[in-house]
Image 1 (tube, rainbow over the protein chains, first blue to last red):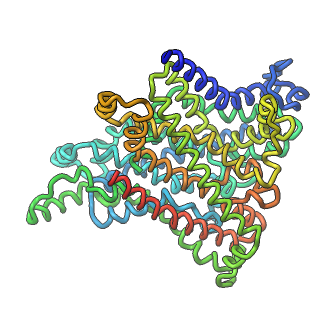
Image 2: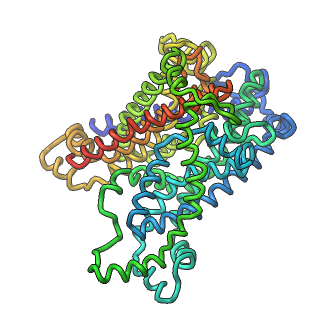
Image 3: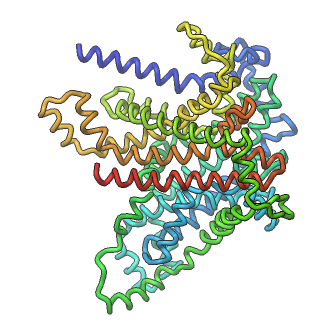
Length: 275
Length: 311
């Protein structure tokens, strides 16, 4: 009896979770591969025809290949920001963890502030304009680095705390200090946490909408998220194309998820609990 | 966030004697030069801290990016006096409370469910977590379609069970809450995995003790899982409350603050004022958001951190 009830509860939970969490995704996929007339109904139905390739090409070609340019921009943005975050945050986290004192206290406070304080957008625009970086990709990259450093530093610091200091001392005896100690000895050991940082910050930056919207406006250099947002008002009558765009934008995080599910979950929970 | 700051620093080891300390500090200094802070510090200070500090000045001005005219507290007065700006405060708080409350409750339930001996546990965990990784814009657009009044899937499903669903996003009374629910749909996966990590770290002896005393599932939940997963609750509340106060993407893609101004939050008002060219007013909104986040996050952190010690 108990086992039966248990099975019943399991089934209910399973069905509910599947409906609530998977139906929206199924809806995206189905609408993306429908033809224009059927997609207008916006219902949950099996496609009558499958113009998959046509829809794909139509979205890619739309507005003079804006989606391709957006993909290039998003890729550059993500790769460059994540690379800088990894190098900058790991270096800083190393000194922060190894050298306690007044400076470390201040750094701790700044890391905490970086996690809590919402960035002041218009003053950031003003500053980037003064530096000649407003509406440029490098400007946006620097902003993403600044806004995502804190979380990466938390992860790096927790990991470095578990690396024995004896290692540093041995390296020092061999005449290895400072930069060389860090890059030759410590950084290679940070591989596991580096992968975690790469994954969590890639997802955050690739999916970011607010900062590109403010700091990189304009079609020419839009990122995929802003392009999708602009498609929304433009494709009011071509839902199949809008949803094809959504599907294309969901593929990169889906791939990361399939290959690195455990790492991503571990990183996000570690950050939350340590943080 | 506080725990590491409050606690003793890990890895520093036992302190050496005073004479020894000076020599070793000099040696340590050369091994761990402050120069390693430099790149991170420069980017952080210039791109994040300078604008944050300057915001306090620009919030007091009428500002066009090129020149600014000092107007005192006029922008703040506007914010508090105009109905369509003031509504942002209320909405922001409602949004943060609703989303973080639901994420705690549902995340805990899902966490308990997904640590039990369920056959499809792994699959369910993935299904619940995946929306966390999907872009908010994509989620927002999809759900604004699913929530359409007549053709929307949500209302069609409700019609099957005999409920007459309204125009969720077009009705002033439901717009904000509908967006909040979508936010929960997208974010509950993170709360769930935090709870799973917390529940898995509870030593099994506690559960054995309950079993010896003949306690049932409820007893197990009430007296072991609930109190001992407190650190997870603390993380979920802090994360989702701060996230809720700052949230912009979902509201902007689903309602743009509408209908009218009824679902505007501080973050969406900041953007609207920026678009309209009222940079000083927009920045005043930013300063207010900063003050609210700090005024809530810091005491909350303190209070929850204290409970954690006693629990």
